[in-house]
Image (cartoon, rainbow, N blue to C red; front, side, top):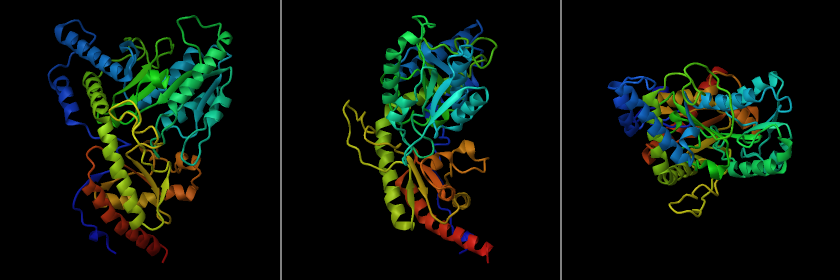
Length: 431
């Protein structure tokens, strides 16, 4: 088989977990602040006052989606900074309290969390990493056993970026509330206006387009969000910080964002993020239904066209809508994001396959986009019980709102040919 036989007829982007295209409606909301009003929102003249008002309106709109107050919304440069501001902000604030030395997290967190925790361990903090089952889900009983009197922080990802596993965030939050109530007398150093540890952080960057972000229902104290995952601009994110949770800033300067994120605000980015989140909330259930249908169709056809293909992560289910009207319960009985398909093709090197798929103008990935410079196999797949060899043979397709059935059919047409070509090239190299 020759590579030139892979005739390109269309371009198919299936890496929406890494980054999403900018929605044209989001761009329209940003454009006036990219071209006409360049004023610094901290200045006193009219264009600056207008910029400040636009930021505060965006802050209110984001808070409304989260069922929060505007003063709990901190704009950042993206998901990674939001995560670091939450984790480092909490530990810095309480670093002098020698009885606060313990953190609970999981073995499947994004590197923004896991690498930060590794640095904490070097500084003497203790971290309990919860194990997961083959579907990437933690056990609530394990979580309850992990809590200690010196636990200051819990950080659990809402939905995984590689296999799409949805964690029981609301249940975890309820357990933390119970723990605080049962151990309130142990925290006599904290006054009535300050919440008692442990504080609960969730990385919700992958979840924002598909899952409920009501912070009261989730019982979270800190939540990280990212514009580039919700068809918004890159380089902008949000940290939700519940009132009463005290944190320290990562940077010092002009004291913007309630003194927690100094630096001139990214006005077009902030307005773009708010618009993207508004659209995600408005069309969430429609997108869930569409993407789940396409994903399940993709998987059924893959099983017929690709010999030995295996699914990584949660099994695919067909949940019935839950209560709450407008389909708000569409994901209640499913443990996986509706756009995520992570598969293993035995005997095929995934990275080679991805390169040759790109020659057919099909874009997908082998693991988190933030780990592509590393030679290590996916820590998420290893934690789910996938062997190191199978992890090297695994790839991730993540669909988006512009994905069509014709796109999936094109991938299904090309993939078997590309697999045969990769096998041919592999065998030729050893002949």
